[in-house]
Image (cartoon, rainbow, N blue to C red; front, side, top):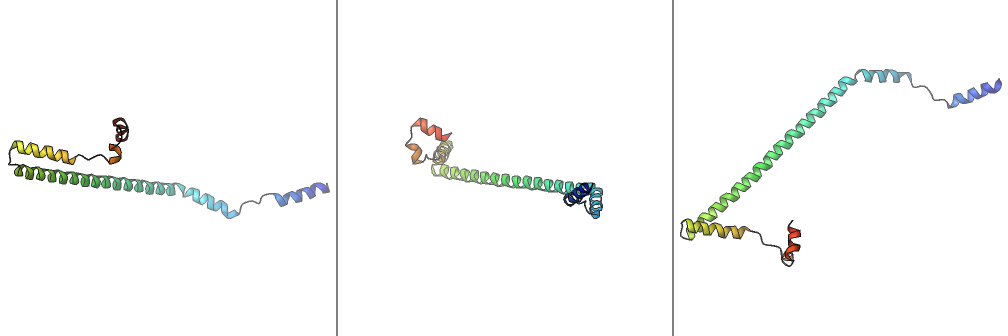
Length: 128
């Protein structure tokens, strides 16, 4: 019987200690306040998501406005160039058509020299 008591005493040294008494109060206290805290976190996350969405939409609208104004400015410049060339060519519908064709040819980008040396099939691969 003495051996059993010795074994129990040795095992007591290796058994885990019970948690402190204050831990129970802390755990139960945080569990009681949990739903309110979760609702607050969800509300904050929702507000952050809505803010991000509003900022994204306003930024995309601003970018669209900038792009539209640039296109409108380029169109106004082109109209002014066509009018100036039409006047320089003597006016009329034929002069306007000639000015528009010349500007269309002048606006097409030229190919880089590296692509110009390729065959038509190879160049079509790079254009795609």
